Length: 226
Image 1 (cartoon, rainbow, N blue to C red):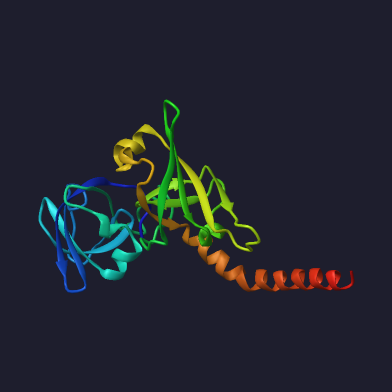
Image 2: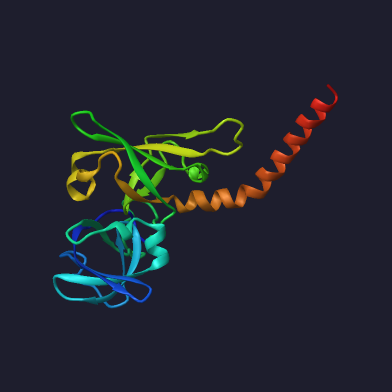
């Protein structure tokens, strides 16, 4: 588990293909002091396992499934990545509980600079709408962020949202401590929704489905009676 507090921005030094994915060598300082083989490190929000390291870099491997479900496959040598080591039970939880399992790749659709902070709007698949709430938590490229607001977009006659937009505000410290300085329209980001929200939604799903069936039945009955 992680907290979503980025420790440093690393740089991709090398990318090599493997039989079922790729191996990345990432230059870093803080997260390799100390680090051990088998440790988990969040790389732009993706939980990856350290397979080799020295005092200036570490290597991780990603399978094809990880590359398909994240933006990792688009990374190039020289790109920066947000890094965080896994937390322990004795650590302070400065952000929120983050698993390192990406739910979707989002896209920046608007960036507004208000002179102090940057307010960034992202677009996501509508299936993630149940896990978002105003002032709730979301992980963007491994960084724990607060949702300023969110809105679901429906197509005509749709019963579920097609898309979801949400906004975050980036203060100067966050911009300096992460890769977010380069955010602009069209940029893709790894998104992990709040794990607690996911479990609550899953637990409530059968009750909500049953309630929806009852409401639908009442509407159908009323329509039949004219």
